Image (cartoon, rainbow, N blue to C red; front, side):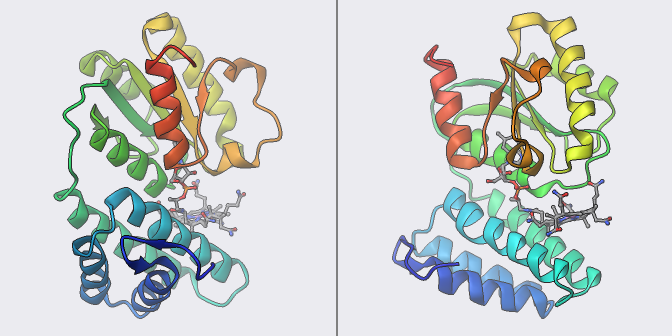
Length: 225
Ligand code: B12
């Protein structure tokens, strides 16, 4: 983490340190207050997601991997972050643009949900009429949701590389039923780890973070992707 990034008058590195300290101490109320203060000082919700939650959760992953915190601490940090995110959601400002209809899910077998949730929220704020299914959703339920919601865009999140074959399978099923009428967007840790996109996923939009998700969906709507 660097101490150089400043957003909305609040130093992101300080915010991350304070937030990390509180969540590892299990202080849910204080963690929420820190984030609400940042929000009230002008920090945008997508900014808080990217600069604070994402980076702090990555740090928690490193602390856990190097045995400096327990699995319980890691679970608690994630649970508190999800709690704080749900509180922030009510403040999400929705653009008056109507970009289309989005269904967002984590792939079956995938338990990591926070990244997908962030993408769903940020695209909703950007004007997508969004349904977020959570994660580990069976394929038939996903197809049903795309049908019911009349989705134009379908997002799949996968953190674990071992879930990529399931992503390929789901993409195939979605293409079979909906053809070109539903664009597919992929993201999550597994795609960052991949050296090359498997051939059967070619043609999907792939985005590594929230900024790219916004840029690539805009390019897609403009007919550039
Ligand atoms: C919290 C957590 C968990 C929680 C998840 C709870 C929950 N409700 O989400 C639990 C306890 C379930 C868990 C389980 C496991 N985890 Co875990 N976990 C994490 C941790 C600490 C944070 C994940 C997170 O939320 N990151 C923050 C989000 C915001 O980042 P993100 O997911 O990358 O999302 C961003 C982008 O990728 C992108 N994005 C994400 N999805 C999408 C989708 C689309 C369409 C788009 C466009 C973009 C996009 O946008 C987001 C914002 O920029 C990470 C550490 C890390 N480095 O990430 C480890 C980590 C991911 N876990 C890891 C492991 C090994 C596991 C387990 C195998 C552990 C075990 N032995 O059981 C299991 C696997 C379970 C499974 N089958 O999925 C490893 C993965 C290593 C690897 N790649 O192989 C990590 C990296 C930890 C580590 N350092 O080793 N984990």
